[in-house]
Length: 478
Image 1 (cartoon, rainbow, N blue to C red):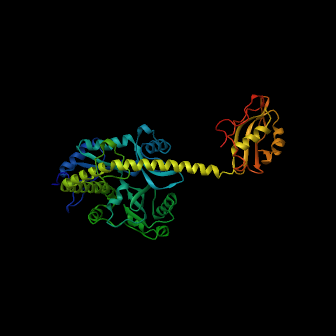
Image 2 (cartoon, helix red, strand yellow; image 1 turned 90 degrees about the horizontal axis):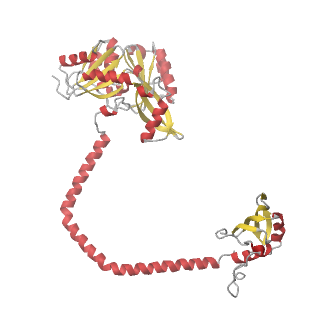
Image 3 (tube, rainbow, N blue to C red; image 1 turned 30 degrees about the horizontal axis):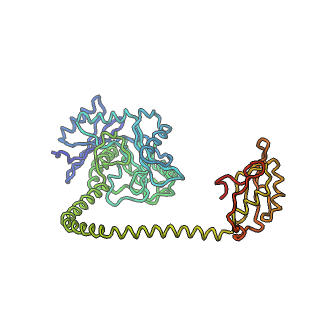
């Protein structure tokens, strides 16, 4: 009798047949049997499991590749719920059924193009998933995962069989599934109608082009009549390494013991049974998925537990000494607190005076003085003109404003002993009865510091004739 919970069971579902494989572990032989279609397949599955005394808590389900749509699509870069929404929106253009009647899952592929990211998706009709899950209700089994069966084929490989790029052609019941593997992980899959090795070679070449691979490290062929396809010379022209995969030791007896016409389906059922608990693409609804921890999560949890125990021991062993040391340190800090406040006050005063000194020195070394320039502009610009902005630097000045005749300002400013190369920097435009202008000029002899320092305090700039403001408005000059 197979012990409760030790068996790993897989159900391979295709349109006309159900294949079940059970691996009990601990050196026990792998069992595999097929159920022909009937009116109550769930009851027949339960009866067959009971008659064989198979006990398992969960059963993984693998669908025939023809029942699942698998594609690589490109979506804008995103993460979390935003990425799921983008994939859902984009997926409607790639499947032949509406989104409300669809079950799908996706995985982000490594690498990106510009601002987008490549996503591998698998989708099928909701009724297909519901029908597969209904098969387990009679047997009172919980689903472990629901995938495309060919996606679990890497679980049959022996250890160390992970080429960089490989294409696996698996035949079952007249259908051929092509599975693309990158570093042993699923990258893409296709189902193709082929009859011989030459057609298989053409499809492998087309798959390489579709994936953007120049070549691959291995082409594997397995399943029904695999030897006939491996003997085709055209396959050697596509890839240098062509052959059967290297199987796990426990898998080979089942493969060799099955009839040739049913070998492909049995291999898929066994691959489903031995598949990962966290498959790349899982069509099982989220609420039905078993709670599992990845190896990374287990390592992290163990590390955190060990660290917590060590920290707790350290706290218990040295808590009393640390408490006494903290008290002594607190007393020393409180004793130094008055002196620290005095030093902080002196430091703040020094910093303030230093900033004031830097400001005075900057003003003394500045070659451009604003007051002489403002006085010169006030005397030369007519009373009916208005200045809106005034900008000064070491190269010259730039002014904007309004005047009745803007072109008359050019000769007035040219006659200034301080300015030269006076010109408009923008076309003159009309604004009511005024003309808007923008004029720049270079320094002829920039006002020096001694010229800007009168014997007595300067009086405020008198208002321009006619009451119009002659100087720029506050904040206009910089």
